[in-house]
Image (cartoon, rainbow, N blue to C red):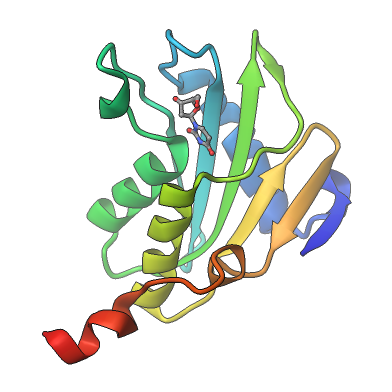
Length: 152
Ligand code: THU
């Protein structure tokens, strides 16, 4: 795990962090007021974004990270995801860095194993960013694709 200033991110990752912040504006969060944005960097340089989408039946909503990863998986199934940036805002103001929930970590892990490449995870605060080098590093003793191999 690494922490750096936003301004220290490289040329690929700086626009990715900015896209995650921008995506908070498209969040549909009338119940929590907690607006989360995520942005996935694909291997070909494209950026796919998403935001949390809530529902009056609360569990039917979905986190920004999964909206984004499922969108990328559907729209660009053959292009690996290299990094995912996450940001959150309340009352129109970006908050300090937030960390993905357990279910989103599991989906990040699947993405990583699907393409066989680590997915960097960027937790974007107002000034600094925490970077995890892979989804697996966020999910010790994880259950993944290999666990099912002998049962298919
Ligand atoms: N949420 C996300 O979208 N991502 C996270 O990493 C944490 C939580 C959403 C779910 C819900 O819409 C709102 O934030 C409050 O939990």
